[in-house]
Image (cartoon, rainbow, N blue to C red):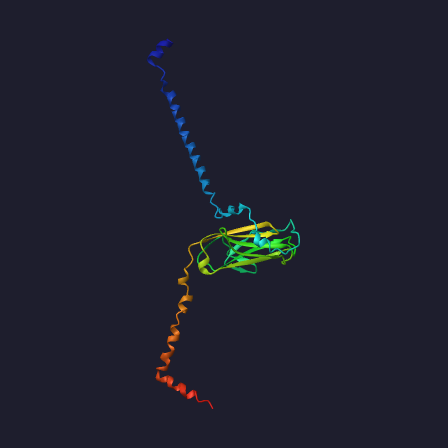
Length: 223
């Protein structure tokens, strides 16, 4: 009797195909969102690695050394900050990118472990061009705060990367960078040339033509 029952009521094998629902786990592909962290490597100071070219003191500057004290190997400088203004040796609104026009920028820093009399040198560069330097025996004491300024004519603040490098002896201790964006105003746009024409001098004869100026001769006979 059992074989006959299977003839009239055959088992339906279609139910075995229902496990196809197991394909829904394709949602596991959503972890592709993990690619978003690729946005993070966008540091604004990404140009600082250019300091890795091993800074050195040009020989003409090194020949000016007069310090006779051996630098302290433990002497340290803080990172250099840059700003348009300072207050009590502290940078106000420090930045690494400045927009033209610029006339004067300050470099501020702190230091510790210094020794008076050691040769200290500061170099200001724009690209590979040396803009300013200072070298002398250190007189700032063991620790504290310091500031230096770079002031140029407005038209000479060309766009590009600027560097400041500190040395003790011939060994560089710290370097900082900032950028200038935008072109400076041309010299012709400055107010100074507008004063060069002596137009105001040409107005002197017009005074002699005014009747009111006839009073001047009354002042000439001085008794």
